[in-house]
Length: 155
Image (cartoon, rainbow, N blue to C red):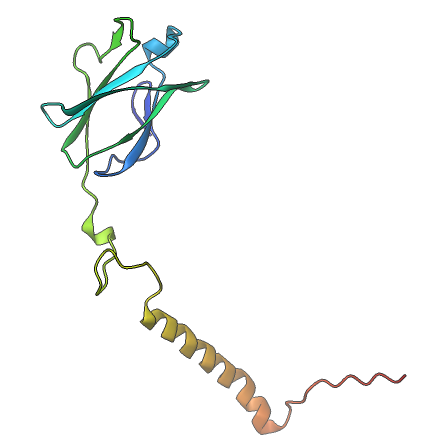
């Protein structure tokens, strides 16, 4: 997803407590900088301020960042030589969405339980299979048309 010109994320939404890959092809990449650092923080006051060096690829500079549960993700880029891409002094800022609780699966044991098929689902599959077998083979047994195939190989 392209959030703004020359900045891409590997996801449609920025979701709290998730890891996102950011790709940068802005002016520092276009000016053939040898290295680019992303300078980022969270919330309106840029809490948890961090600088990390991005990996240079043919497609631009890339980095993986773990988002926290703040309301926004703020960042800018620099090449370590005093050259910045900070969106003309406004920095880049994007909202972080909370994970909808409707998408979180819960069971009687809580969120720490092993994921698996629910017992009701397994039983419904067993019942469907049993009904299929009864419908398919019972009429053959009653009519006498159910015969085993016998190999009649004459040696």
